[in-house]
Image (cartoon, rainbow, N blue to C red; front, side, top):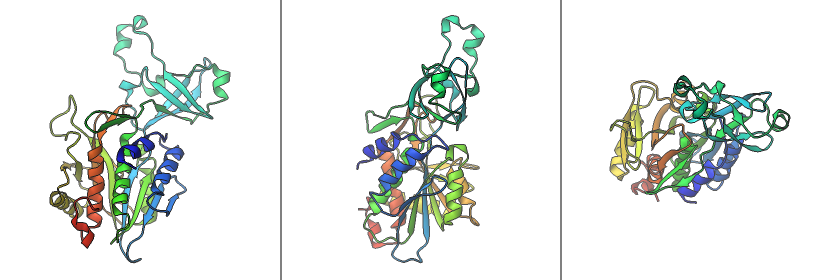
Length: 348
């Protein structure tokens, strides 16, 4: 399966934070093409195991989160409209007038109600409503919608997967399905090789509401080292030049919670293997699962690799496929770095 096909499959499954079942099942299905040792834990995290040459080998955790931002139904109004709360960092600037899917007893098409500009005064046109102030219209009256929707049901913004020019793709959930695709690419590169690590690939849940899945899985697994994979900002209209362009490769993070030693090894490997990369320096927390993993079980040496992404937390997120693959190649190179099989830049 190509990276494009992998991303398309991952992005097709809904998985708003706290209701990731469909996304977890799709991820598990893809992981079983690499290893039969796959489980979904009690919290919803998907965990796949690759064995090492010896049972005493250190454990390396690879993490990418499988949940996406969205909304949750809080009530049904007398007129049949739904009131909602956000699950994760929904951009209120982009919600009005959007098409959505309500994941009730059956998927329901809906849209975010918006007052026509003809009937709005100047103050209303300037005001940005809170998520709790918007209404979702499914076309049903209250009696009919209550047969299909309950409080707590999740809602996703419609952002269909599409291949663009120059090897770029867009979808609503590339944060962080592209990270999951990168780890899958690494696992495929490692298939059939003798590994110096026991590898646990975790596609974790509830990152968008605080990294809860990563905290659960890393506490349970107690890895010796970890590499978290997420997205970060890419250069776009209105952003400074300090951000990389899509196509500039893997972003290697350095921040207080992260291991300087692993950072140095990853940077040296990227240069040695000719893997395109940039450095992302942060002065505090990374706002990714790396923060949660690093402080579990007495402390875990943790690294962060990111994929440049445009239009984060919108229905039109954008990444370049070569960046996804660069992350996977660097992970595989790191795992094989002290073995005879680690000499090829493509790890094949």
